[in-house]
Image: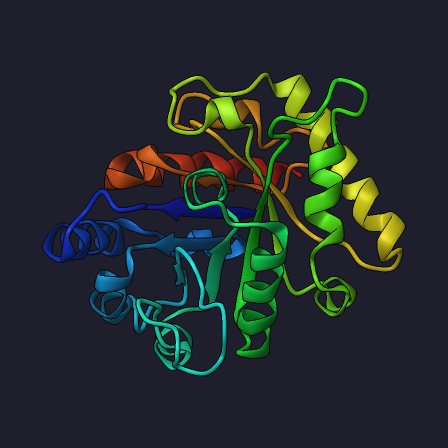
Length: 248
């Protein structure tokens, strides 16, 4: 089971380090049965990574990845810097697709670069403004665009994000989440039949509603936003996830 905490750009370096330290002092070894990943902003990566350097429990990820392996793109973070501090990288988040106009092709290029460095891409998909004739068309497009080599090796996670649940405080209907995540599994299976890729739910997840999603068929974890910015809140989610994982 995967519990991912996306801090977005809510914290500066000092508050990121403080939050990381609070989590580090309270995290329990009983959570070794899960994959817990924190995603600070780029400026805070080195500091947060150093706090968990000796931790077997918490891993670190970047909130976005470079578009190319060589260092020629002004404003991009160097590949060597991401791979030095991270195990994971979030790609294609709905906010970047909508506000920065990132295309499926751009996400695919970033995924290829990340994978070549040994990083695990967390590729976000959503229904977006798909037509009523095919509710899942946009998700299909986003999954088909993922480089086949990465799918064949199963070296990625898929995070399903309902657009209207991101940052709104209005989590998606669990039944709809279950139907969509199962569709994603079926879609991947049709492309690479022998590979099982974890599918997560992300969208206003908190300690109160997480138990509505983790037991669902097809849901292998959650991508947490605002609720990951408070140590006790995030660890409450982890604690509940641990109980559910043990009961499986």
